[in-house]
Length: 270
Ligand code: SIN
Image 1: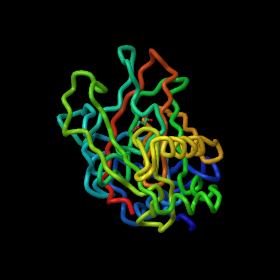
Image 2: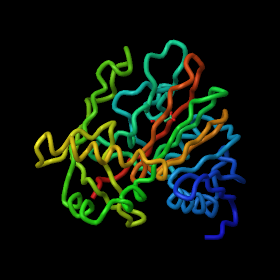
Image 3: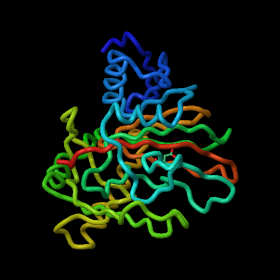
Image 4: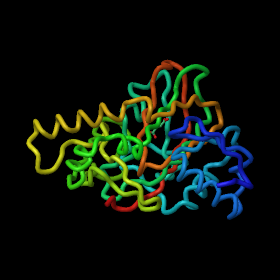
């Protein structure tokens, strides 16, 4: 596609693109939004530098993609559970998202999109990696694709103690999803198991299930499926949880990294 309203600079041939020519503080016109959406479906994670937006504008951006998702347990800002706080600093004992995962894949209808606005980022470190799950699927051999095609996996979350004193919004989710899902907008197949939430494969023994999952978790770690993004302050990332996984690196203690995430509900994977 030739973009007329935005400029799209791929980060790698496989995943990620930096978008310029857009001020997300203003509601994008429909022609601009449709180019952003097109670039998002093509590059899977988009980055917008030098953005200055209010929480309301971030929430509105989420609304443009669908109904907002409420995280089961994470702290939030502005008294609004749809505005998830992402904050790590000198008092932190953990970092959000430091295992490969697709956001809250343990929900029956896992989020389709996440919009992270980082206002504070360390000068060095604090990168996030994303992995392309279409590419991970495509790279599997035909016999493994055939083995995985009919299988489902159990996903579950256990947030107990994870967010300190903060009281959870709802109980820990769990769900079964196909190991290979079809993206509802592109029709492409993507690998849909992740180390953060996937616990076992339905119908296999524990030993078989752990061996198969470990092989897939190792497979997605191959750098050829990845981009690695170094944040600048006031950057927004928009990613597609249906066909990516991500990992936030905590290598910057005791520096502060802080922002908000707005997440958009998805549909039941098939
Ligand atoms: C997350 O949403 O999992 C956190 C990502 C990040 O902080 O880079």
